[in-house]
Image (cartoon, rainbow, N blue to C red; front, side):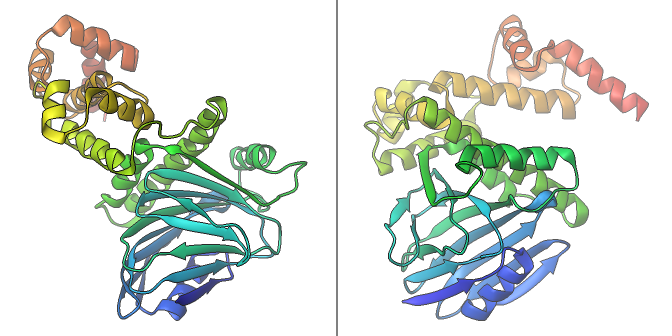
Length: 342
């Protein structure tokens, strides 16, 4: 078993400490630090970035060749950690003697701990792991009122009597967050544009994790129902298939035959992970694609309707207006006006 130690909440220092413990090559582009590891300890990438207002993110996309214990101890800080596991499992305990609890794929974990307490993360040998850790330093004053307001709200939510205690929440399964993290990893731009896109998406992921916590409390911590872990992997595959083929006529019967999940499990999975039925999800994807076509092509509205797989222009106009609060025609006119004035 290998043990690594993090004794700082500063991304630059954290990556340097991981390099000292795990080896690898450390690079930097603006505020983004990337550690590439390919040695006897493991293979993959660990990267992170400090954002404004005491927020940072750290992502592991790794396979470790030994069981790894990561000790995080930042006694001068009192952060809230928001964790999401996109692949594999991640286990946590408060100190080496604490109770171990495991975060599975597509789950959110939120934790706070007493000052001076050690947070232990356990990584399994030979397991592909992809997990994102967003840290909010609640004791650091932000540069604007909005940032400090966010921290105060988080303290009110997660700190009892404004004092941090050992608290770990493991949420319901959620694919929306996985999709945003995939978008984060798909950013191809460089320089300041890349930094701004990363900051924007990290804030979206943070917002979704906070919303997941709120929804779970309202639903008494709704769990996965009859779905197995394998079922949830299949739901993700079905979601990707719909994203790539939304312009075609997709039916529940077709999805059942292709992916092997019963109609009831398909619906249960989509409601759990997307908050929509399968039909609603297909419609959402089509409308988003339509918005992109209207914004970025010269297609007229009828051509857009045909391209996204619908046949009724009036129905399309109805659902588009419900989504964007304006008609497709008005939206296109607004886009054209913006181009003319630019």
